[in-house]
Length: 317
Image 1 (tube, helix red, strand yellow):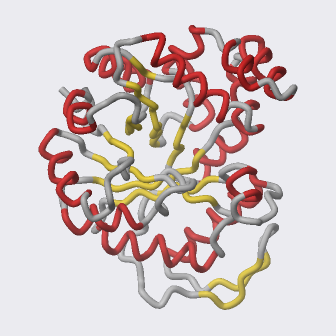
Image 2 (cartoon, rainbow, N blue to C red; image 1 turned 30 degrees about the vertical axis):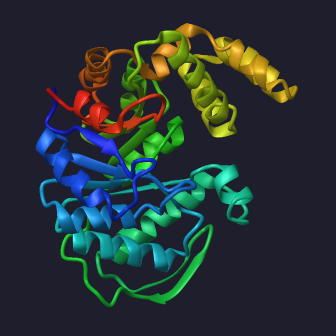
């Protein structure tokens, strides 16, 4: 299907130590990448550290670490340490995240996310290149910071990006973009902003269940939870789904969660959340690759599945 084919870790219900055997199995099955996240489960770096130590065949990535929740120096140290243990297999993902994660869960003001992402990106690139930094950036300032453990090779840095400004920043100053919550048919619109010569990775939510009604029920709850967050809502307005999703946004704003789920069209659900048989799911992932996603990373939704069977059934062919 593609030279890169990733899966999201850690798996629900599996301890980080138990993942050691899973990493060998993933590599044996043909998965090339494991990508973590940093929302409300494990942090972004610890699962990748375990993978880096126990399985040398896997590429490693985090999608994404919020630019607000670590100080600039600590973030540079975390990236440098992961790059060292990853031995050239690590890709860093930076992103603004969202108001719920930054403000409600971490008590940090979610202010000027584009500017903060730009400034953190510029800082970490210079820090990883060994520069001593003493500068007042637009959104923070750093005085006299220099990494004491040199980074042999700066890892690629991708930006989590949803709208034109951030997508262009990813193409202009980073090594590419990480996409999320989009259809295969949306990739070209995003690629046009990032540029043809940059890497595009994408997290793809997968419900490997042939009961379409049951899968759509779960998918609708996921969509209403994510796409009512302002950044994702604006993303889908830009992609052209404003008319299709306005009934959901209106019902959600009115406090009617049940109606918000009910009014999401099947066509939107089927575009944004991959579901069906294992073969149908793999074919859907392939459409993202054909559209220009170079690092597809599936995220298995733990609904009525046997994890072992799902990991094998969704593996690349």
